[in-house]
Image 1 (cartoon, rainbow, N blue to C red):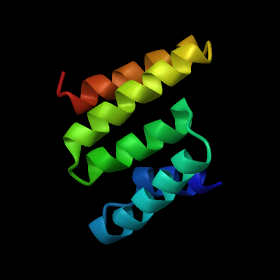
Image 2 (image 1 turned 30 degrees about the vertical axis):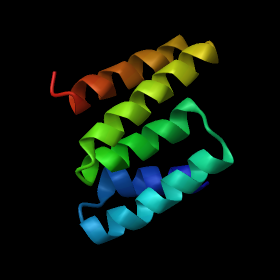
Image 3 (image 1 turned 180 degrees about the vertical axis):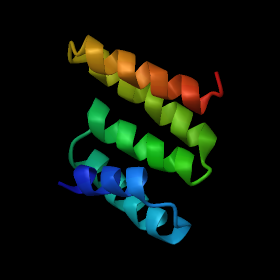
Image 4 (image 1 turned 90 degrees about the vertical axis):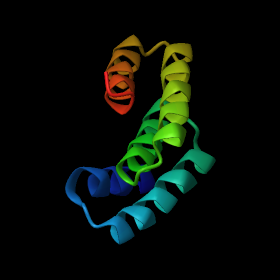
Length: 88
């Protein structure tokens, strides 16, 4: 649930103060369950709040977790997100 709310903020909110709140929710969701989806949301919010280096690190970890879980389609989507973070 925290991840869903945080992701909704990522997609729809541009106010940095609100995004920082969502970043805390995303971090907590990762603490509760570290998986590709939760890490992707966390990385996306890190990126949107200007923490590009941390975002890239977390997105790479999300990709690895998705691959380890056998979810190749998610891994491919996350790789596209990583390319965006890296400016490719």
